[in-house]
Length: 212
Ligand code: AMP
Image 1 (cartoon, rainbow, N blue to C red):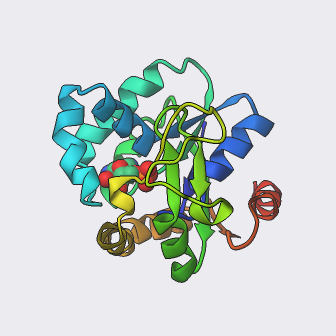
Image 2: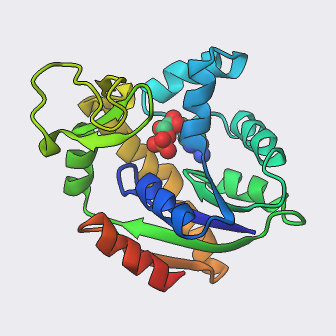
C-alpha cells in the first residue's frame, strides 16, 4: 500500500512525512530526492549522471529514477510506503501503476501553499551536511557562511545548490508544467485530497491526519 505526499518544492512534504512515520511506524518514508542525493554522495554511476540535473532544478529521467526507486522498495519488505517527491510526471504515475500487484496507491494528499511562502522557505533553507536536519535561517543568526548544526553539533549547515534563487524559479516552473498534471491524474481516480499547508508544521500535520 502506498500513500503519496504531493505539493510543490518547499510545501513541507519531507517534514510532514517524517511526522507521519513517527506516528505510524508501519510506514516507511521514501523520498526520491533523498535517494538521489544519497547516490550523489556515494558517487555511484547514477549519482554522477544526475548531479548536474538536480543542481539545475530539473527533473531526473523517469526510467532511471524508477529503477532506483524499485531497487529501494525491494529492500523494504512488506512495509507500507509513504512516497515523498514521486511521481512528479504523469509518466512516472503510470510507471508506479505497474507495481499495482504489490503496491497499490491508496491515497494522495496534495499540500497546497502560496508561492511567496515557498520561495522564502526554500531560499532560507539550510541542511546539515552530516545528519540531514533541516533549518531555516530566520530561526537563528547565521554568523558564518557555514554554521555548525544545532542538532548533531558536528555537521555544517549548507544550502542545497537547487535552493539558489535562479534554481528555485526553475523548480517551480517545472512543478507547474510537469507535476501539477499528476494531481489531476489522481483526482480523476477519486483518491486525491487537498491539505492547506500554510501555517505551523503541527497545525498542518493535524489537518493531514484528519484527511488521511
Ligand atoms: P526533492 O528533494 O524532492 O526536492 O528533490 C530534489 C531533486 O531531485 C528534484 O529537483 C529533481 O531534480 C530530483 N528528483 C526528485 N524526485 C524526482 C522525481 N520524482 N522525478 C524526477 N526528478 C526527481
